Every structure is written in C-alpha cells, then in structure tokens.
Image (cartoon, rainbow, N blue to C red; front, side, top):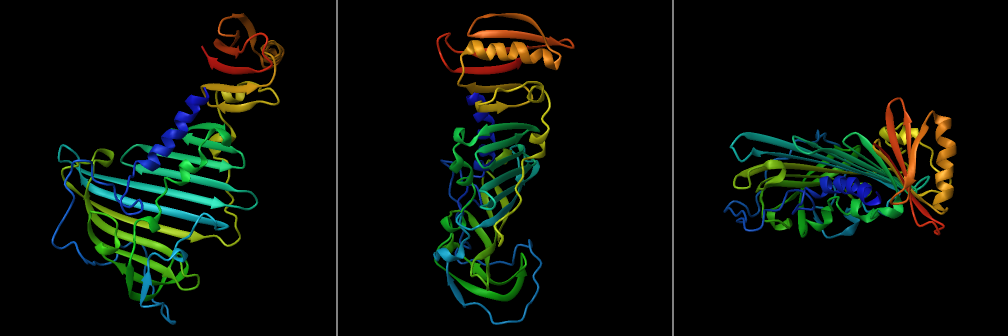
Length: 359
C-alpha cells in the first residue's frame, strides 16, 4: 500500500511537472518533431507590460541602468528563512476541434525554516486536470488530491522532487537587461523595471514582451512578466496552432522566517476508515485515506491480531470471520459494513504489515 500512496503524491507532482517549460517554467516546450517557432520580428522585440501589477510611480534614486541577469543575488533561493513563490500562467488558444480554449495554471510554493522547516506546494489547473496540494511539516507529508488526504512519512517521499518541479527563473534567462522605468510599487517593494528581449531568453518560442522588477532595497527580482506564443498540447490545446501565453512569477521573502504553514483541513478530520480504526503505537510507514489504512509494526503478527481482536469491539465492531491466508485476516462487521484487517508476515517474524480495507 506504500506504493499506492506514492501514486497519489506522484499525481500532485505530475500536475507540477505538466508545465514542462522553456523559460524557467514559463511556457511549455514544443513537442518533439514540431517546428520551432521563428519569426522575423522575434529578435529584440519589446512590448508593453503584461498587466499583472498596478504600477505606481515613486520618487527616489533609480537602480542601475543595466543589470546582469546571471548575477545570483537577483534570485531568491531555498536558503532564505522564508519565502512565497507564486506563478500564474494563462494559455489562450484552441483545442483539436478548433474550439476556443483557455487554461490557467496557478502554482504556489511556500517555504519556511521557523519554528521548523515546512513547505507547501499548491497547484490549481482551471480548465484542466484540477488541483493538488502537498504540505511537508517536520517528518510528515500530507497530500490532498481530489478532496482526499493521503498522509505519509517524509522518508517515503523524494522531498526534492516537489521543489525541483517549481520553475527556476535563473535557469531560463541570461545576459543583460536595460532599465525602462523607475520607482514602481510591486509586492510592497519599491522596484525598477527592466526589459528582456529574445536574446535574454533560453527558448525558441515567440516572445512578445518580458520584464523583471528588481527591488531597490535588496537587489532581488520580485516579479517576472512574460507574454508570448507557442505551439503546445498542454491540457488538450491544439499543438498545430499557436497558443497565446501570459505568465507572472512573484517572489516574496518573509522576514520573520515563518509563514504559519498548517496541515491541510482535509487531513485534520479525515472521514471513513481513517477515523474508524486504532493504529498500534510504534507504527511506521503509516498511510491513511478514506479507503484504507496501512502501516508496518515491529511486533509479531499474532500480537497485532490480538490487538485488533481486543480493540475493535470497543468501537462497536463484531468479529465475524478470521483465518490464515496471505497472513492473518480478521473480518469485522458494524451497521451492515464489513472491513478486513490483514496482518501479513511469517509466524516466526518479529515484524508485520497491517492493511485495513472495506469489503
């Protein structure tokens, strides 16, 4: 059952990975065998700002006229005490039937180090696959997918696989950028605006306009904006037609190091089997959902079976069948519902695997 739980976590990761991007996660790469987009107007093309922020003029000395986009100081990194990273990407095109189609992808990463290291990843696809949320607190992972909670120990999950799916702006832009506007209030910071061209972008997609906003007091990029076109089959879009893509990345550091990342509400009071059955002290690799409970325990299988024979009646369940088959199995009945407790392991083993499922 550990493998089954990992599938749900993988689904959340797939939602992150499904935006396979060229520009630090900005726009989907063209499929293999498709023609790269090339236009005579592509090089050094600069357009108006993508309207994701309200620009407010602020007096004060401007930043440098040009910035080096390879400077690591421009980018918030995982070593920050706490930060939020939000991406908002909108795809406007047609599906394979020629019907207009719009898909929005929202992704959020929250990372904090105080009072303990915690992370939250949220993906919401409007017009597509749905949403997924994963929260890492201490040594426990909580994944919510299709309204159900799937807890698991951190040791059973590749922790880096989540954060590595988030776009990294510094991997997709290079060269130097020219300042085009000064004194703009963005995300609560006084910033200067710098224009990017296709020469700055590590992508073959058609660029209409791209900008970064650099915080004067701190020198980091707090907002990246891009508008362009690409051929993609993302979420059912027609890969043979151009799709308009607008993107905004917001990077916001949190000075006190805490974002108050909490266990998802779906995991606080889970329904179904999760709340019905006791779990033995010392359980490891615990997995819970409304459909099953599984764990491992360093106890002989006979002792585990005796535990459920004694504890289940305290919760109103009646033992109606038991036997040996793939381990010890116990069938309990209450209110017309039957559940099976299977305790796997050899009779001589000092450890066992427990699975509780509804029949």
